[in-house]
Amino acid sequence: MKTLINGVVDSCIDVCDRGFQYGDGLFETIAYKNSQLQLWDAHMQRLRHGCDRLSLGVVDEALWLDDIKQLQLKEDAVIKLIISRGVSGRGYTYNTSNNVTRVTAVSLWPNYTRDNFQGIATIFCKTPISINPVLAGIKHLNRLDNVLARNEWHSADIAEGFMLDHNQHVIEGTMSNVFCVLGEELYTPSLQQCGVAGVMRQRVLEYAKVQGVSVNIIEISKLNFLQMDSIFITNSLIGIWPVKKIIEDGVVTEFSVGSLVIELQRVLN
Image 1 (tube, rainbow, N blue to C red):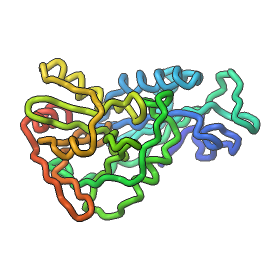
Image 2 (image 1 turned 135 degrees about the vertical axis):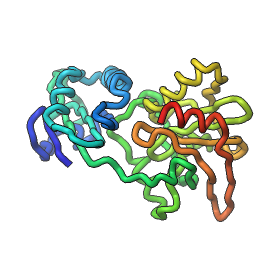
Image 3 (image 1 turned 90 degrees about the horizontal axis):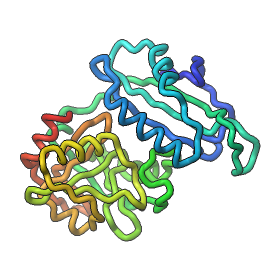
Image 4 (image 1 turned 90 degrees about the vertical axis):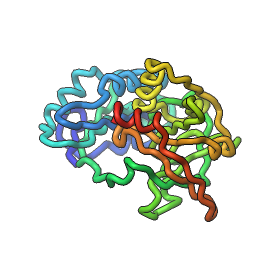
């Protein structure tokens, strides 16, 4: 991994940085494929929205682009942008200066198995997702729920785990958003109380609207989730992966890969 901190090649963050101390910041994970930054405008829009929500100084888009240019990318890669509130004294109180810390990092493109694009096996995680409507939707640096949930399994046969809230509503995957199909209608969990509003999720919603597909953004109980015809997950790196089965306590629930899922993969992947 090659890293720039405030535009300078470096890999060491000040221990007094609020991103390190408190997770006081945001991040974006961006696909660089075929010499193009994928969904760049959507990532920038979400980052600006997150900065506004946290009253965090906004980094000029040109600075991020200068950083990426400096990295001299020659092949497909993953770019991670991190912004924190910067260095401060001890205590939770922050000053209102715009001395943010900007981190731009690049890593190799992950070697996803092609089988995942045909369908994956998943589980339900026991770690609940934390409820906080103030932080819902944004991609903040506090990701302990996801860390704990993702380490509930280590089998390479399981590609993702679904996280539920305390009311047993399905919210998202540890690294993804989730969609369901029932009949001709598309469903995705409401993220008003928790969860990350992914840029690929938004792309699916926009495409469905243009195509006249009925979209329901609602609370989805675990029971209703298991009764869906098709399920698929999304994020900015994987695109769309269909779910072929959910395994829970030895019980396997299988799902079809319906025509709508196949169409979305064809158009959006």
